[in-house]
Image (tube, rainbow, N blue to C red; front, side):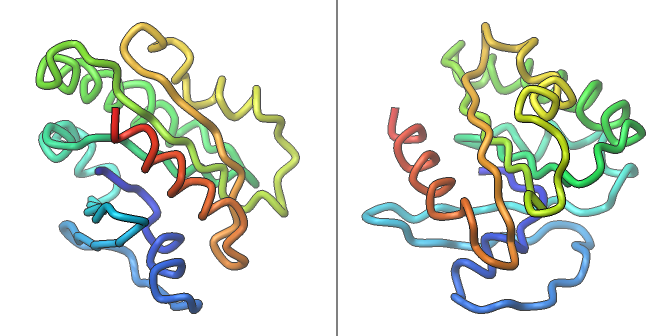
Length: 161
């Protein structure tokens, strides 16, 4: 499982709010949900890591993209979502023997968002990859936990396939 913005799930795991420093390298967090253990990998390094991002995703069962839905940064879009996600998905499809890849988009900071679900989906461009993915957008707030149980439930149901 690949995760960008792991603070949401760490807070959910520990059932308390923590200040999490930016990731250097990568971190793995294990979260038990129902009868399944999920390993969440958080890859740090910002723009420097994007060229190698696909290498970390190869063994993943799903990809989680956390979007700051209070501000859709198009610099981020051009660097990660447009280029990196495309190459990552292409390699994952080969690795998964052409099975569709579950993608979960977490629209974080939903309390400050003025974007519609359609605008956020369009921003990620994930709808362009419907032939190799299936996706869901869930609005979240990592400070209140809003949307996180629903996100884990979706992952649980869709990684089982």
